[in-house]
Length: 95
Image (cartoon, rainbow, N blue to C red; front, side, top):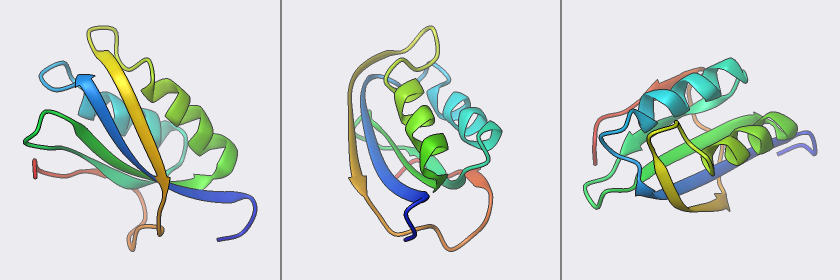
């Protein structure tokens, strides 16, 4: 990974399912030109992989801490990860 690109795996907890969080995050990431994916988890959290220019990844992670207006984010855990093997941003089914 070069210095100007970043890939993070996120786990977002709180009231983040049933409030449009997954679609909202997909829109944020696509607008920022990021690659990756987002999906709901059966434990009630949202999981995402964000990859792209470091400043754009950081902006989207900051937005994730707020979420869409009806969400209530308790925590965003972020860890470095490997980039996705596909371009673009996708919504994946619940795992």
